[in-house]
Image 1 (cartoon, rainbow, N blue to C red):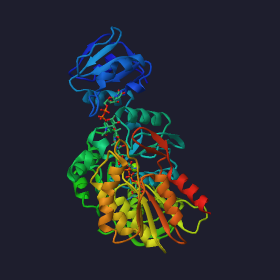
Image 2 (cartoon, rainbow, N blue to C red):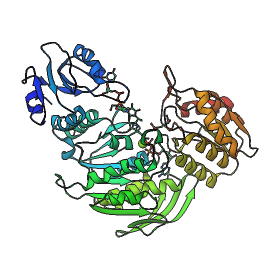
Image 3 (cartoon, rainbow, N blue to C red):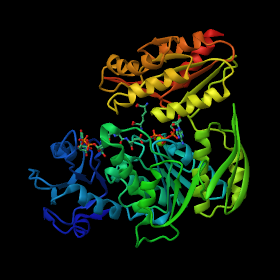
Image 4 (cartoon, helix red, strand yellow):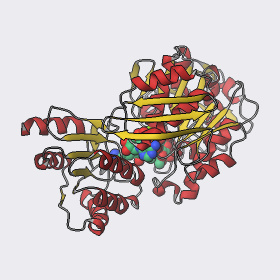
Length: 495
Ligand SMILES: CC(=O)N[C@H]1[C@@H](OP(=O)(O)OP(=O)(O)OC[C@H]2O[C@@H](n3ccc(=O)[nH]c3=O)[C@H](O)[C@@H]2O)O[C@H](CO)[C@@H](O)[C@@H]1O[C@H](C)C(=O)N[C@@H](C)C(=O)N[C@H](CCC(=O)O)C(=O)O
Ligand SMILES: Nc1ncnc2c1ncn2[C@@H]1O[C@H](COP(=O)(O)OP(=O)(O)OP(=O)(O)O)[C@@H](O)[C@H]1O
Ligand SMILES: N[C@H](CCC[C@H](N)C(=O)O)C(=O)O
Ligand SMILES: [Mg+2]
C-alpha cells in the first residue's frame, strides 16, 4: 500500500498543502508511538491529549507528512496537510489509502451490550463449516482464518481497522465477522466499512460514563442499522437481524430500512426459540422460522446463549447459509474462551470462569448457575475502574441476591483506588445480603483461592468479570493475571 500526498489531498475539499505534494507515504498512524518509516502522522485533538503535541516524536520515528488542523512548526522536508477537521479528513483518506478493503468481502457487524463476542464465534464457526474463509475482529483477538493477532479495543480505531481489513482482503477472506462497540459507532471508527448484515443482541446498562444516558447509548448502537441500510453501496443483499424481546429493538428497527429478520423467545418473530431446556453442560431447544424447524442439542448452556445462537442463526440465514450446515455446526460448537468456561481439575465442585462485567451479564450467568446448581453458589466478582460507576452497586445487589456466598474483589482497577471501587460494590452487596456469608478481599488471587478453599461437594464457584483476560490493569502497572490459571492452581493446592 502506498499513495502520494497529492492523491490523498485530492479527496479533500478545504485543504492546503505546504511542502512536497509528491511525497509518497507507506502507512498512516495517529499514534506517534506507532509511526514507522514514510508515515503520514494524523494529529487528533483527543479527549485526554492533543496529537499535535507528538509531531516531533512522530518525525523522529519516520513520519514524512502530517495531517493537522492547527498551526504547526516542522522541519522543511516534512509535508504539512492542513484541514479544518482532521477526523473528517481522516475518514475520507484512510479507507482510500487501504483501497476500500471492506468492499471486497462480506461484512457482518454485531452490536449490543452483551453477547457480541459469543455470537461472533458461533457465526464464524457456521461460515467456516459452509466452506468460507473468515476473518474475525472482536474483544478477544483478531483472527485471519486460524492466524491470531492481538487486539486492544473491541473495535479498533479507523486506521487499525482499515489496515486489518486490508490484510484480510489480501488473504482472500470471504467474510469478516466483527463486533461493533457503541464507542466505535459514536467515534466513527467503522467509517469506510460497508456492512452487509448487522446484528443487534440486546441493550442493558453499561458505559453510562461515556454515553451519559441509555437513550444516547441506544442511539449510538442504532448507527449500525443506518450503516447497513445505507443506499448506494457496492454489494447487494443487506439485512438486519434484531432481538425483538429487547425493548431497545424499537430504536434499531426505526433505523432499519433494509430487509429485517427478527428473533425472540417471548414474542412472535421471524426466528423463534421454544421448548428450551437448560442443562448443566448444554441446552436443548427448537428454532422455528420460514426455513422450517431445527431441533438443537447445544453444548453451551444458559438462556442467554439461546439468544446468542438465535442471533448467529439469523445472520447465517440472512447470508443464505443452508439450515443443515447451521445445525451441524451448532451441535459441534463447544465454547468461547472465558465465557461460562468450566475449570475442571477433577474436583468434586464446579468452577466457572465468565466475562460477566455488566449487571445483565452477571444476572444471566447467576440465573443459569441457579438453574443447574445442586448446592451453593459462591461468587467472586468485582467491577472495573475508569468505567461506569453506577453499575457497581447494582452488580453488588445482583451478586448478593443470587449467590449463597459473595466474595467481592478487584477487577481491573485501572487508575482508580481499588478500595473505593469495592466500597461502591459493597453498598449494593449489603442491601441484598440478608445474613449470607460474605467477604471483601481486594487481592483477586487471594479471593479466588478463598472461594475454592471454602467450596464443598457440588457447590458452584463463579469467577466473574475477566473471562479470557490474561492481565490485570493496576494503577501503575499491568500484570499477568488469568482467572483460569489461578483457579487451577487453587484447586490443585486443595487436592
Ligand atoms: C473513551 C475512548 O474510547 N477513547 C478512545 C479515543 O481516545 P481519545 O480521543 O481520548 O485520544 P487521546 O488519548 O486523547 O489521544 C489523542 C491522540 O493523541 C495520540 N497520541 C497519544 C499519546 C502519544 O504518546 N502519542 C500520540 O500520538 C493518540 O493516538 C490520539 O490519536 O481514541 C483513541 C484512539 O482511537 C482510543 O484508543 C481511545 O480508546 C480508549 C483506549 C478506551 O479505553 N476505550 C474503551 C472505553 C473502548 O473503546 N471500549 C470499547 C468496548 C466497549 C464494550 O463493548 O464493552 C471498545 O471498542 O474497545
Ligand atoms: N445474550 C446475552 N445476554 C446477556 N448476557 C450475556 C449474553 N451473552 C453473554 N452474556 C454475558 O455477558 C458476558 C460477555 O459476553 P460476550 O463476551 O459474548 O459479550 P460482548 O457483548 O462481546 O461483551 P464486550 O462488550 O465486553 O465485548 C458473558 O460472559 C455472559 O456473562
Ligand atoms: N469492554 C469492556 C470490558 C470490561 C471488562 C472488565 N474486566 C473491566 O475491566 O471493566 C469495557 O471496556 O468496559
Ligand atoms: Mg466482546
